[in-house]
Image (cartoon, rainbow, N blue to C red; front, side, top):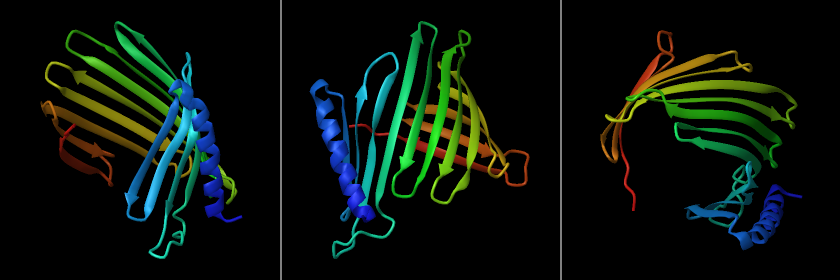
Length: 216
């Protein structure tokens, strides 16, 4: 069975599951036309509870002018995630897990994450996040790799200024990476941010961006 047929079958299975969940407005359905001959869709369903659970698939396909599938353009990614959010007058915390499997290439990942935000003082808010991800490749029989990361952000809500720092390490390469940055809200939809990756090292790199967001 070709990968194209597998993708079509998977698309049909997930579509039927999504229709079953639609009765309670729990359907996840987000199709998109990426270009003239390429399409992508996210489909699935969610189950609201103390631990919100959702599952589905990302399906994509691109074709040539003659209608033949482009090599390596097919995507059939199965995914599932659970998350729990706790809200208090002083802050919010969230924890969850996500698993994804590339059914066409035999690779996948499991990610555990936790984040928290709270009022630190009258003029400062704080956000922290941490995650650990395990990636595997069953086809190439490669050893699973583990990546851990952690981030911290201080926010001054009255001026729209925030300072952030993050770090990560992977057992696959043994590389340690870090980033520090600052963000300043200039207008309601205009932000200026600057960051430096791996400061005080030989591969130090910096960037400055001015971002404007439009909603309609």
